[in-house]
Image 1: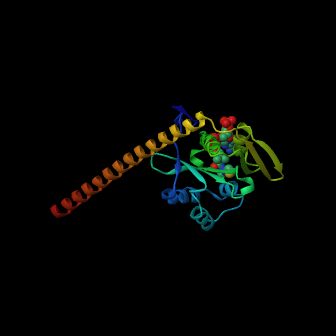
Image 2: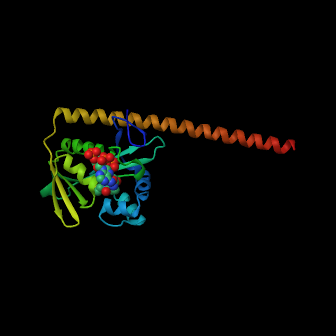
Image 3: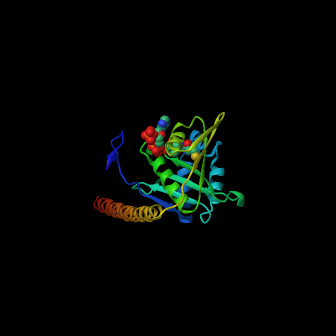
Length: 218
Ligand SMILES: CC(C)(COP(=O)(O)OP(=O)(O)OC[C@H]1O[C@@H](n2cnc3c(N)ncnc32)[C@H](O)[C@@H]1OP(=O)(O)O)[C@@H](O)C(=O)NCCC(=O)NCCS
């Protein structure tokens, strides 16, 4: 374990799992938690709650890939969308979009999600990855630049593109391993959360019984 500036433990291996339609409600909750500035940085416009709901309802989990990081309370603290090109002429291209909740920033989650998405993209035959960011978005541009992306600035907006090498046995194996790790981590978190919810229920019942006893005694 490493530590961030708030001395919150940050796992060295971040459990990033792929998300399916069953996670839609949590993806909506994650995006709705972004403030107006973050929505602007993420989507390139001040997305309203309604536009966010529509974006999530339209997510195509068969065509695209969505990755997420859950905390112990099973709250999605980070989400990345790898959108594959619909243009047959550019079938080996994909676009990366990401958001991390304010409280979880600066711990490397954005960078880890980007790495995870590039490995997946390579394994899926993508050779050019695009990132569309506002020029003021230092964190996102840093992630792209560090990965070796070429950045082109058009005033307030910056286009980054990263050439990806072909998949190897290593990229295929590492994706299997990290996905397995993340699924196991998620199941554990689910169990721990259910147990705490159960204990909270027991506690509530106890308090109810105690209150009833107290009332009948007085
Ligand atoms: C962009 C975003 C995903 C980064 O997430 P994150 O988890 O904080 O990113 P990381 O912790 O991996 O940081 C990446 C790099 O940016 C740096 N960084 C983070 N926040 C920064 C900030 N506000 N200003 C300058 N640099 C910053 C980090 O130090 C790190 O650099 P390093 O690798 O040299 O240490 C997050 O800020 C976010 O969700 N923003 C709103 C949505 C958005 O902008 N999406 C991107 C467009 S698709």
